[in-house]
Length: 134
Image 1 (cartoon, rainbow, N blue to C red):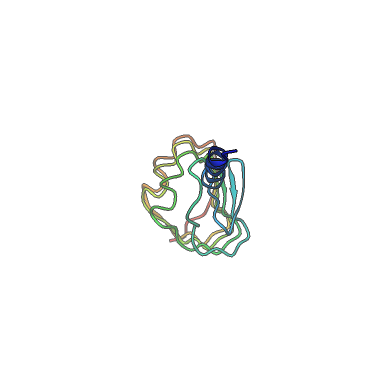
Image 2 (image 1 turned 60 degrees about the vertical axis):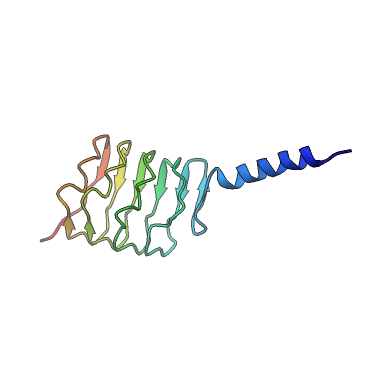
């Protein structure tokens, strides 16, 4: 009995299972939700699936977000960034998040929000407020 075709099919499905929904090692992923809350993260993890619709990054130590952190996450509908140490939101940081409806940046140390940081968030239904002190 030739097992080669069976082995090829098995390897194909194993490869598909491990590459179709990437999840950063420091997070937990379920369906289209990536939970990176309470992980003491100083940076937004890489390797988040582009299919992610809900990204939880609350209760970490994020003080700055890389300009390309959300570039591949155009399917995001919810982004939780509350209770971090964010002090600024740079221009066009969220420009690819046109489907975003829920955005939370409460309980941060925001002192500077670029004029065009939030321009592309035209689909927002809920944007939890934040204070800017100058």
